Image (cartoon, rainbow, N blue to C red; front, side, top):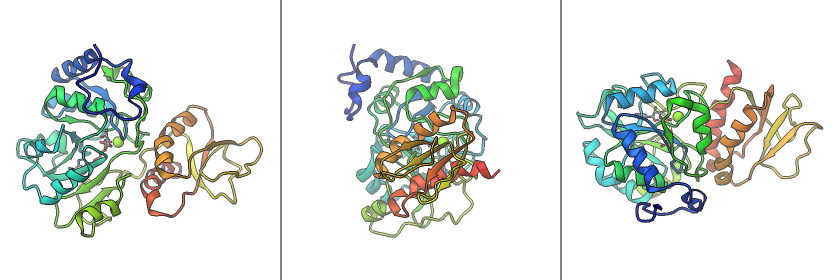
Length: 332
Ligand code: TXA
Ligand code: MG
């Protein structure tokens, strides 16, 4: 049986997977989730490792599969903003305004948690991260499952997030029971995280929904630097990182120590023998592709990967944030 009727809406890549994914696959995923298992789930940002957010066994399996430290909280994925009150309390009006503008989509809101929400999900914090993903497969699973799904990116801790189904299997192997095929992720970088639990809205992780877009919708200033001591995503200095050394290189002085360089400027002349991976100068398209390229380069056994320094404009902020973290491994 096809997916017609259970897919809430199709995005442009839907044709890629609709032929292979069936209602039975969604049912199989839901059966695993209800039994406390974990499933690789496509979202529009990156693939997630999903488990029942109200089941401690499932949460423990997520942390174990990712080798993730217990002090790093998980995002709970919900089917619609109507479910917010199940998970959060003292919800400010800004949450509903942003949900209306950006959900389903790549924005996570940090809100005060309901007392029943497990410490294992929130890493003992009084807040919970919530998001409605827009990928039709994620929404179909959420709808059929009925509850909230905790889903961190489906990679090993500190490594590069997967943006296609095979990368989940490569990263997690037998620790994930089923990976649902959902094509290539449309956004390619993890969601923007906005903390609404304090006195003023504050960005904890930049993403492709920009600070400016959020400010325009809220009509107020949004803080961008963490000023309190709650867990900040990507606080670990090395994160989103391949194993191969990654360095920034200037277009005018392309580092000859790099065997491969990821560029975005057309027509650069690279030293002989250096592989060029040319990505778009449009940050949206660059973001879609960068993690896949980093993964591909990472298995080539290179000594060093160069990344052409990005334009200093705001729309590149989220990509710069991730690649700065990827380059941090090289300094250790
Ligand atoms: O796009 C995404 O957000 C993807 C997809 C799968 O939804 N998920 C994702 O999850 O990137 P993860 O676990 O890899 O990153 C979520 C970040 C963590 O670094 C965590 O510190 C932060 O969200 N986080 C979760 N709950 C939080 C909370 N209550 N307060 C502060 N930060 C929180
Ligand atoms: Mg992650």
